Image (cartoon, rainbow, N blue to C red; front, side, top):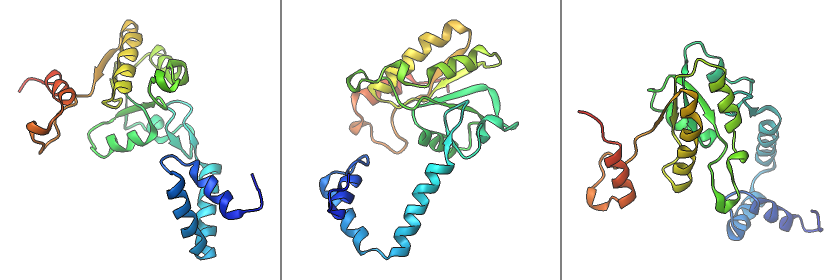
Length: 198
């Protein structure tokens, strides 16, 4: 990579980060150039530490320092219910509710044919193995409310229902405090479909 220009090398490296274009990478590079050496050393040490110490749980694929992770080994969590999410960061969003006490399974993506991501590219085999081992009663599909997330949830339901497990989908729809006039048709359709008894 080194072509004699450290600044250009840094800009090129930063551009490989998701969501960072050429201009953002250049801005970041100039910011780094002005940052005190000890802050840069601390940042580099944090990056190396996360690379060395953080891994993925061999059961659920969530990020962890200890394998298996605390969600998979906790006696306080209900192993009969598994919540399936697309990415590790989705676990945090569900945990913030303090309402879910089951276990998780992280797919590491969603089925997206246009991006070349098929079912075999996701952590589906591990989920099937967990269900096949017995004791699982319900799979909650908490994939994102996108075309890819919906396709993934439907695919999982087709695979899992024949195994005798209950497959549910998180309700989606109008945000609390939202105005119906500004709700798009897809969201409104999902809100109507997700209605429940009162």
